[in-house]
Amino acid sequence: MKAISALYFRAITILATSALASLSGSAQIAMPQQSVTSGKAAGYFAHNIPAESEILNGYSTSGQIEKMTCRPLSAIEGVWDFPDEAMKVTIERFSSPNFSPRLAFRVIMLEADDMFLLPGTVIGYIAESADNSIFELWLYSEQQEQKLYSPVKCKATLSDNALLFERTLSLKMKVRVNFSRFLPKLFRGITISPEVKTEPLPVGFKRIFPKQNESDSKRIRFL
Image (cartoon, rainbow, N blue to C red):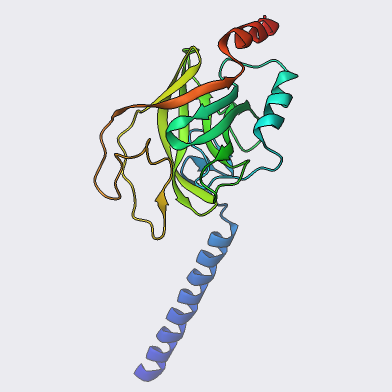
C-alpha cells in the first residue's frame, strides 16, 4: 500500500512540474521584447545613436556642395574641413522613423586620408539645444576597417566658421579585440580601462561651404 501511495505521489509531482514548465514556456513566447540597448527601444533612437556606423551611397565633396547650393541651410549645415583628422565632412539635416526628431543632423565623411573609410560613412549625429550655438554631438570613437563603433557624446559650439568640440561626460571604454581608435586626435585621452574625466579639446571643424556671410543670407529664407 505504501509503495502504491509513493508511486501515486511521484506521478502527481511529475504532472504538476510538467504543467508549470509548459505555462512558463508559453509566457516567455508570448511576452514582447522590451529590452533597451544604448538608448534604443523597439528600434527607436531617442537619446543615443546606433552602436555601429552606417555607410551611405552617392556622397562626394563637389556633389554635396552642388546639392546644398540649391536649398536653404540651417546655421550648422554645410561642408567642413576636419584638419586634425585629415578629412572633409558634411553636416546635413535628416529625418528617419527610427530616430527622435531631436537628432536632426548627421555628420558624413566625404574625403579622408584613411583609405579604409568610404565616402558616405556616417561618423556622427547632432542634436540641437536651447542655445542656437551649442549642440549635442555624438562621434564614433573606434574603427574596424570600414566600420565605426562606440559613439562618444560631446558638446559642439558653433562660432563664425568653426565648430569646436569638447567631451561633456566621463565615460568608460570596454576592451575590444582588433579595434583601433577612430579620430585619434579627438579621443587621444581615452584608454581601454579606467574612467576618463571631462576634458576640453581644441579640436573641431572649419567651414568650407557656405562661408558665414553666405550662411547668414540663406537663413533669411526661414523668416
